[in-house]
Length: 312
Ligand code: TUI
Image (cartoon, rainbow, N blue to C red; front, top):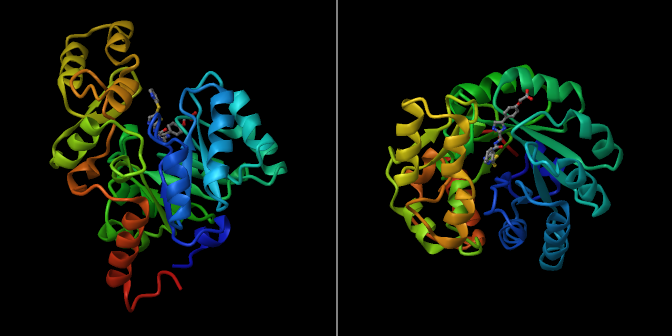
């Protein structure tokens, strides 16, 4: 499955694991890279030294390329950006903001830079400042999201930039991957399905909720305060949305979500935790290893794309 993105990153399959906060730690990232995709360590809101340790642990588990996702709302982002260079990480993706100020440093160090964008304007801007590729992330995704769906965002971004486009949002099987190629993408990024991977260090309660989720089981909180977050619906999202509708202050709403992701991932608190997940949760039916998942995705995609020339 050779595409511009597999060539750019030196990986076997055009499948990138999302840099999910708390979920994308080194066991998962290394397993995805070992299976031929690109694993990512999600720096989320962590301190830089945690990220350094994660990178060093991942290096012990795989000699294949892996990356780090920098969440730009992280108050430690400046230090994390430097750790990436110091540790010789090959690929960085960024989310929840504009990574422009780090680009010269990363480019100079030979790091491949792949910003996650949710609009055509941001994709064009990232191309101008030297991005190697962009992830066009539709609103179907879990976590912090934009407004536009994958189906309409990916082709518009593909028309607007010359660098390769990676599709994200709503993809969890070979049908989604084949469709992404048809829309002009050269690879996909998937998050939700990897939350239930055997190697994901995620509480079984959260995994079970994803496995049982139906098409309509995610909710978006925080649309009013400009930080929309998609997660599986539970008592927390209900309380949040009720309070949001009643005009609660940003501070009051923050109290409901503070530490919520850690509660879901580590404590398995499926009532009060924030179980971030994309709409593709409804497509995720089975726990399996990263190796088995990637092989299944490749087989399904190949069967659908047989006789077409979207990759060679
Ligand atoms: O970043 C994500 N998804 C995330 S980050 C995250 S951790 C978090 N926790 C609590 C509050 C906020 C975040 C959970 N999920 N996806 C990539 C993404 N980036 N989606 C949308 C964007 C984005 C938004 C605005 C990218 C650029 C952007 O530009 C703003 C600007 O500066 O112009």
